[in-house]
Structure formats: C-alpha cells, structure tokens
Length: 172
Image 1 (spheres, rainbow, N blue to C red):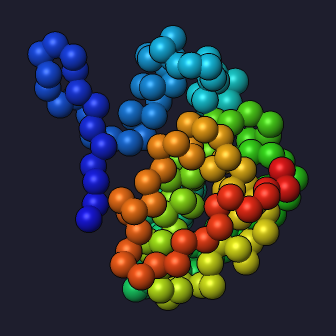
Image 2: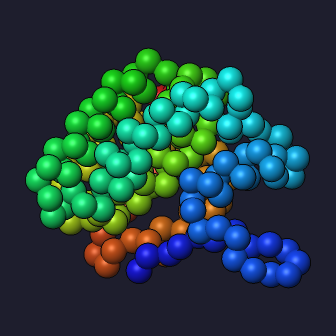
C-alpha cells in the first residue's frame, strides 16, 4: 500500500500540497521556527547543492528503488548509485558534509524501506549491508530520535520481509 503525504492548511482545512519534495522544503523554511531543536535542513549556502543532488538521487534512488526489481536498467542505475553513495559516505558523515540536510532526509525515506520493501525478497541485491558506509550511514540516521521514533516498519514492510538490525552500532 502506498501512502501519499499531504500538507493541509489549518483554516479552512484543505489540501495544499502532496509533493514530498515541496513539503520538506516548506518544513525547513516556512515552518523552521517550529522545529525543536532548531535544525536547518535546507540552509541557504547548501540549497543549490541539495537540489543538484536531488536531481540525481530522485530518479536513480528514490524513484528507482521501486522499479529496480522489475527493470534491469533501473536495477543497474540504482546499484551504481548505491556504489557512488557508499564511496561518498566513506569520506563524509552526511551527503553534503557534517550537516544533516534535506538531501539526507530524502535519501533516508528510501533507505529505511529498501530491504523490507522493494528488495524484501532480495530480487535486486543481497541488501544494503553490502555497502558498508551507506548501511552505517542509514543506521546512524536511525539512531536520531526524530528518525527512529517516527519509523514504523510494520506500516511499510512486505509480508515475510526480514528486518535488518537497525540498532547495530554505526561507525559514524
């Protein structure tokens, strides 16, 4: 079952957006003053790099993960992207350095679902664990309360999917 995230207005209650990309930016900019603790996931000095990264990650990973089990070109693109991400994360804590950004959040949504969703039956590859830096990065994100406390594996796991150990130590 697919869920569509939507943002609604408070008064009157009406649908404003169901674009996850736009909602993330809205939360990081228009509603930043409501964040606790105050974290800037879309800082002005990184916005161009976040958007550049998203132009690659969106099609290759975020949208590509769902297509990879049934499409050889999508699988090849996804696995190549995982290789590149693994190499990138060998050199930095997050995608764009030390700061957690919107790019990390967008990637997280796909990574946390990958081994229990699109790759639940290992039709794409053996799992995220074959990319040690990417897997450690994903587990490090999971250790952040805002990520861990809002992750409900039962809500998006396919029947019979083996849940990887998200609580294993992350070398980050």
